[in-house]
Each structure stands twice: as structure tokens, then as C-alpha cells.
Amino acid sequence: MTESPRHKCSSCGRLTVEYSKFKCPKCKETEICRCYACREKHVPYKCTACSFEGP
Image 1: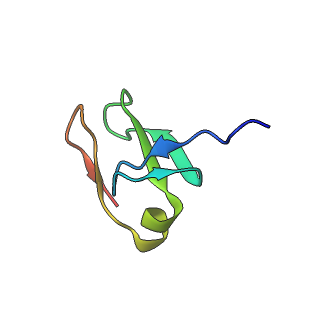
Image 2: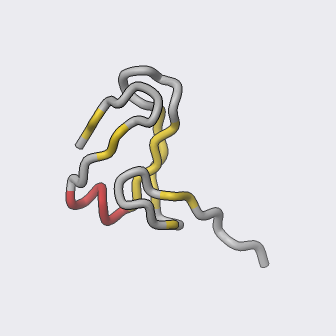
Image 3: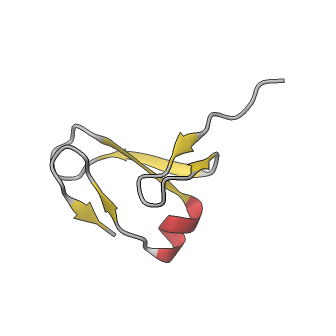
């Protein structure tokens, strides 16, 4: 049995298996990963490459 991949949420920093991943809308370089809880609560995230902040 294989484990589901875990990713670190860009908003809260927790490891999660329920997430969405996308490229930064501004620089298109950094991959943003957000957990389900932060997406639902609209917790902000910040791109580590260009400092873009999103909801």
C-alpha cells in the first residue's frame, strides 16, 4: 500500500494530503500549495520568489 503524497501548505506550513497546487499568478515560477482548510478560510499566501500575496 502506498501513502498519499504530502505537501507543505504555503499558507499555514502544515503537511497535508488534501491540497491544491498551482504556479504563482505573477512570476509563474514558484509552485504554491494550499491545504483545503486555508483555501476555505481564504488565508493569504506569499510567493517566495516574487513576494506576490494572494487570497
